[in-house]
Image 1 (spheres, rainbow, N blue to C red):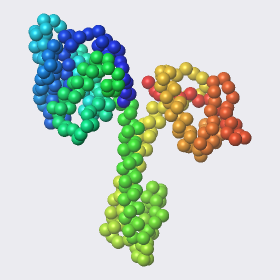
Image 2 (image 1 turned 180 degrees about the horizontal axis):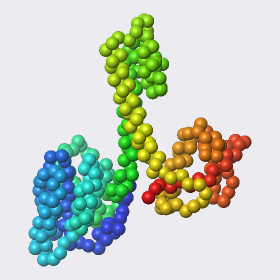
Image 3 (image 1 turned 90 degrees about the vertical axis):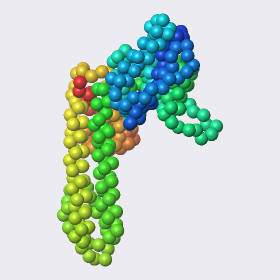
Image 4 (image 1 turned 90 degrees about the horizontal axis):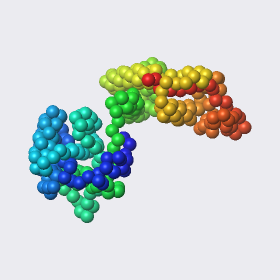
Length: 320
């Protein structure tokens, strides 16, 4: 999520009064959604509750509120909706924008609250706070909150691989620590559950007092190893899918991805090079440890110490 302090819609709000806008805040929970609205030329906030996840009912409620407010002012109205970024993601925001409703997603940590004393926290209070925050933000007040820039569905999908890989690595670490903890209780150290001969080495382990592993303990360790092997296979599948999405092309052919994507991938590749200090490049040159190496456009390679590491003719881009 990329927060911003100001957008084009905030500038437009300086020239429009409350008589032309119906302000609505959404407080989303797992059981119900609380809709708080403020009609034009009114200081009373109305509250409505609908079932969670019922987008058609939400759109129907907003249409009914708009129609009622338009009858009072005798003209057309704009509807502006605000909600907090949370577990519901951005599908509600996209649904509102698809129906020509101005929608904003706010970073909940950026909403100012009173710190005079410990405050009560309920959906009703939070809904009113969001609505007041939206009013101040639309008036153009600085540093009221930070609105999130919602990603597109394509951008969200591109992040799935890295997030799934991170989750799998955390699970693998948990099972590895579990095995080491069980063995430490028997006086055994130095066993690596990620070694390729992990099952063979497990058969030869002896406790600190010279006894072989008991049956149930060994069975539990074998089940943990089975989980680790499954995770290793899943991690390999995810990494293979990730590598397929990156195309390595030689020469200086023009890539089909955007300039911003190419720059981002190049920065990521440099980070990989910094960590892979023992890996060799496609030209057979060993990358320098901790990277003091870079090549400027039209310039010579930067040296690390007394050695110069040339840059291979590689272009990197994400597949379209």
